[in-house]
Structures are given as structure tokens and as C-alpha cells.
Image (cartoon, rainbow over all chains, first blue to last red):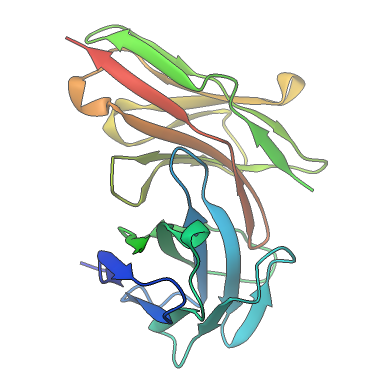
Length: 115
Length: 111
């Protein structure tokens, strides 16, 4: 089945220790998104890739970076995690065609704990 | 910029009872509207979407939603709730690649 996969599902890192979260997709969608979701809150968009074009949200901290080496994979790098970065991180994908809007498909998320 | 309001943080219904979750949006142009469901510790699953056309849209798991432009609403309904429907429900509005979510409504189902 075509899907969005996130690894690992659970990640524990130490305060200040860089961490990378992974997302892959078999949907061949050209747009990929990263969201941060804290407990009992709505997902908050961090950034998205339209093909290779990176689009950062204005309020996304510099501590968060992303890489998309090819269509299928996208990574979220947190350079120096703080306690406030503990959250669920959701990856999503969508098709895109000029003038069209499509729904987003979400992965199961990675729960990040910072100790 | 578009925004979404879900007035109810938490709703409890009895199994077999009907359900309506409220969603109001703010957007200047024709909205693209979605309802997603999230079970604990999981990602979001699309229930249904409205882009244009018939204002009553059918989704998965027996859910439906009605778009009312005059009220800027897109309420989600289900005639008979099952215990497995207990989850968090998010309404969202999209513009290009920018999707904005409401704060969510947590649904509890009583036996």
C-alpha cells in the first residue's frame, strides 16, 4: 500500500544533542511537510518542500532544519534540542498541480522526548 | 490568512447517539475544507473534504459534513457513534500548500 512512513516512532535524545527524524513516502507526491504537535494542540507547520524548493514558516526556530535528498525522503534535523522541543513530529505529503489543492496524507508521527 | 475555530474542546456522547462537531472558518475566497481524525499516538487520517459542488459531503466511517457558506461553517456529523470513534478530531482549511488546523475536539464515547 502507498503510504507515509516515519522512523523512528519514538526517539529519546538528550538536551542539546542533535537528532534527526526521518520520513519516507511511496505516494510519489511532490510536496512534503513537517509539523510539530504538542500535547492536546493542533499540528503546527514548521516547513514544507515543493519538490526541491524549501519553504520555511516565519516563526519556525533556526534550531529546526530540513533536508530532502530525493522525492521519497525528507529529514527533520533538530540541531540543539531543548526541553520545549519535546513533541510529536508529523510528516505529511500531498500532490500539487498549479491551481489545485489536494489533501495531505500523514505518517504515524515520531514522538520525541528530550531528557 | 485563513483560520479555523472549533468551539468545543471536549465532547462526550453515549454509544449509539448522534454526533455533531462544530467548525467555523475564516477565509476570504472559496475555502478548501477538511476533517481529520487522530487516535492517541497516531498520525492524522482524512475523514472527508470539501472543495466545491454538493455542500453535503460523505466521508469514511459513516461521517458526513455540511458546508454552509452563510454561516462559515463545516460541521461534522455522524448519526450513530461507535466506541471506536473516540479520538481527537481536527477541522482544517487550506490555501495552496498552507493548511491551517483548528485546535481540535476530543470525543469521548460512553458505553
